[in-house]
Length: 110
Length: 118
Image (cartoon, rainbow over all chains, first blue to last red; front, side, top):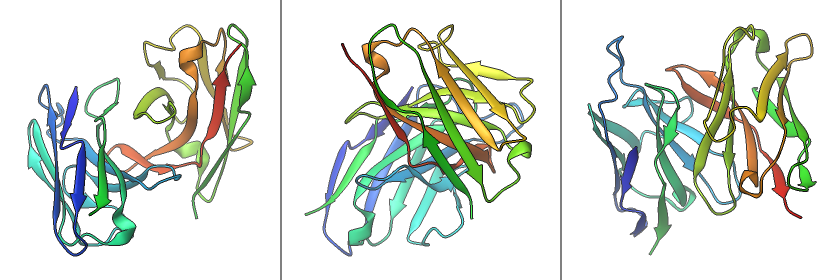
């Protein structure tokens, strides 16, 4: 089970935001990798991959997005929130079947 | 560029069947593992099923096992989801998704809405 906090994050434009994702068990795969990713879902849009394997930014993702963590605790940080960052953010794990998702964190502008 | 276009959604009565399709383009479809993920209205994401590039391996969420079947036609660059004995709780937007680096899902379609209602 992936548990995200907070569930809602009102942020001032230009300020940082941080989302936590905690797993009920270690996400370290038997091959030594940790398959924890972060997705962004803007209103009315499908999800979009931001970060994979904890901290790797996907193609085209701005460098204001960063991921960190290990084992069971992970964090997504937005260094300076922009208007286009509004949406719901999900952590997801692919270490074991079934793949699961966190319940989502809504980022909105104050 | 990678494109995934789902079709086949609609309104269906409980107990009936529906087949979703996903047309893929912009990449070598036959070499990629593919997934279906769904999202109930106003809710979070739920992984549904996965199929290996050559159809030899398929896995399902417990909630759909025995009712849904994932398949693909690599000659047509198309992914399918056959949904039988549909339930009200299957109502969701169904996304076709490609498994890429990681592994993780790196590209998502726009989704197709399935509504199960009497």
